[in-house]
Length: 279
Image: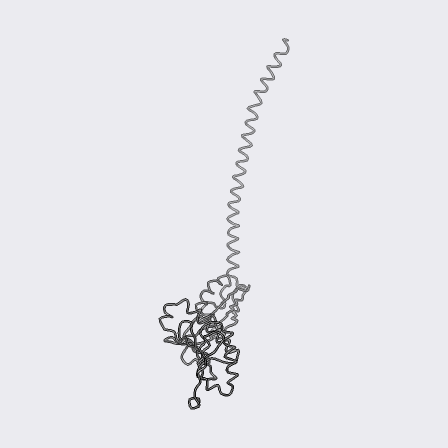
């Protein structure tokens, strides 16, 4: 019993001496780790600056390299609009870096030309720019105070230049204020009238004039015969078929037909000139 007590006391005392030793070690480890982290952070900051500088230098080299200088500007599809005009309008020049070219911004610029229907600008690396243009094709001339070209979509897109003659049918019957007011129904009516003109042309009856006697009532005049064709509105295929049959029946005497009224479904009302009037 007596011999066991000192051993227990020594164990307790030994345990108390070890605790301070373990705390100092942890403190040393923590300090060393913190110092290491500081050294690594300092190195990364220093090297990161060098890396960023290297990236900026590489970027500048790529952007300014003659390898990416534009050497070819190609324009496809232009007829009315000359390629040189489009290139100048786009602000493109040989030698400029291809990286500074913004296709979307150039397309918006070129779309302001009234003859441009669709436009596509594409960069072809390393040194070529392609401009693909689809022009508007005039299908008629609208007489509305001034003369304007109209395309197959019924779009009034530009004035007819002095001295230009294309042999297109004339559209009459509209007032100038309808153009300035941008009447939304005007385009639809023009488009329908032009579709009718195309159907007539397919049947070898080319038109000289499309006259709107009322908002949705058209009168046609062909280049071949002095006959007023009152077409009403709509059902174009059937009405054009009736015109063809009537002219076929009157072949050789077409000039005696003063007018046809096809406004009524399934029939035609003819007005005949007398023999003296047809001479």
